[in-house]
Image: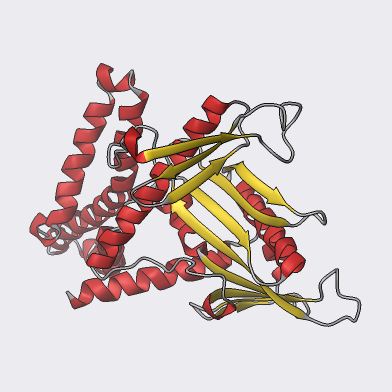
Length: 364
């Protein structure tokens, strides 16, 4: 079969080989920033190259088997076997060629905020934080709390964490590739610890996620004149320096009004750096969402408010049931999901997203 059937795959293979040459050069080997950027693109192309290589191998073997079948009947059987394998290899390649979210391989910033429901909502927000932390541990990712406000009963008013993978993962294994579907309102139905009459209460917590920008990301430039930085004393857990030094930072981006608070690092300099990185991540997410909106290709919905009517998922404790309202996924293992066994729920979102992209590509 001719390469003309999949010209995009051939182009991807050429770029893949070029990247390997660049990554082996001394100037890149000694530059971690360049290596990270090239490595991310190399990983992104890896699945296409693997699928293309497998398809080419089957195609070439099939051509050879057909030529030999006239002289040796055994090759006719081999040709039939390869003919049966070819459609699956071709479909896998077509799927690999569907444009991915360019941020899939990136790490992620996640915010969880207690919504309607008072103390019960804060306790549920804490449950979500533990769920995502345990899920990240199962995936081999790290979780760093960047800011957190808690309640007296151990609930979480709001928390911001950075969730990061080790090394340079393939896009499908990136943190954003899985957690981007978590943005929205999460509703819980259970008997609160504060409820003396045993009545089931409904409350909610909001989750906002956005891909984390690299420190040297040149896609987002921030003019220092556009920043207002306030310094204040840290509060809450944090060691002896808390409430004794002005180390916490509130950074406001004047053109957009975006505000970032950072207090969990040990020094003002560290909090400034962390706040700037989160601000760049927010601006990067805003830029990509605007581009997606202009192309009428919104990836997923995020929280607009903490109103329960915008829920994406319901956690029903009395029935041990979890429901994803976007995909129709339903299971009765809520206790396991809250312990970090979240993959099946996320997979339902991934599969729905892939089906939509396949349908869109077929219609073009």
